[in-house]
Length: 518
Ligand SMILES: *Cc1c(COP(=O)(O)O)cnc(C)c1O
Image 1 (cartoon, rainbow, N blue to C red):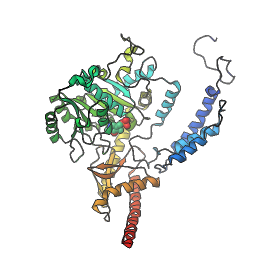
Image 2 (cartoon, rainbow, N blue to C red):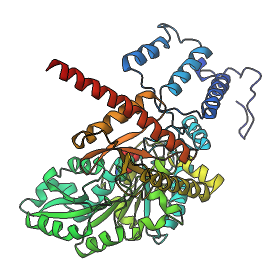
Image 3 (cartoon, rainbow, N blue to C red):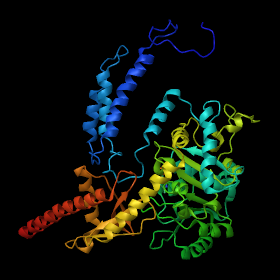
């Protein structure tokens, strides 16, 4: 045995026989070799900024390609094969949505700050799952630091709020709403719904455009679809304040007790912000838990210019904040905030002697396992913290401000184009619009948008999405990449027009064919 104390391992000479089993794949020299191969490939990938969307591969074809890359060795541990690894990385990189390209405008996850990817790599090597302090000491400490850093923009007293990370905004919404239900219906955890038989039924109120994870949460909690009160939207696609109190009164008359009101800070479809301050007033009047789903838009809080979109956020009971959307970290990384620390433990009241100590000490007091569904959990805070620690808030603020400004600019571009219509003023970096050339009949507008989206996607230069706005399909762009310029957007419009001409030609020849047959 070597004496204890930090020592540099000898890498040039083979290590002394450590005993036990010698397994080549654990050889540290192979680690270096495979990392270098991978980094070189990723460097090339990041350097390619050509306009690319997604080239979709048929699953069967991709599956064949993947199988062809697997070793045929069945008896022994196969040797390390550099070429095989290189081919696997190539296939992985090539078949994804090209999130680094300015052609990618379709979804809410983004290219990540490269350093964030490097830290994720470290996380995978040191493997420190983060629900319990002893397993992930730095991740747990850093969660507290990031909570304090970001709470500066929310504004709760430093010693009374809480934050926990979850794997995604959907899980955060579920967790917060469980806490809300257990807070307002304390018998539910032990007795189930039977504790409230014959009483007003638990219900939630949501904007009509709420993310599907929220209505799914209701199902998970045993709250039926008939117990979801859908609040109508105004023309800006925000919850219409004139309709809120009447809708809640009507729900009460139907025998419902609304215990949670969900406001969206940045709806998924158009990026609209519900009026949190005014909804908070209603929630306070009626003793309702106010949850803000800021999965997309909470990041605007770090910008002095844009923070006002979440006016009243300090009045919320809980807030979902995805860092893997507008904080540009690898997915998933979600932060769930509670205004009151005690309530963060309401979601799960369990004893499990193998992990939860009865009397917390200075270490176990740091455990977050009591606040989340997850037990073994990725230390997802690390990439966010390291980028924040290295570059500070301004990196995030500058990028977010650029993306929101760009979206307003391209909205103005669209307004000057007679063959396009916009469906809303963009409050953030999501913009929906329709292609409406003179030749399209009113009843075909919906189908045309879908056909255009499909063709644009399959051409592989731009990746855009679609969403129904007020019941009619619209094209949707999400500006997540700071390399996108107004010029790129004009190129997209030209692409849409070119696709439109094709479709128009097809339609005419269809009609001729139909006419000929008649
Ligand atoms: C993306 C999104 C979600 C879901 O978050 P995930 O991290 O994808 O699970 C929830 N709500 C809103 C408003 C979103 O935009």
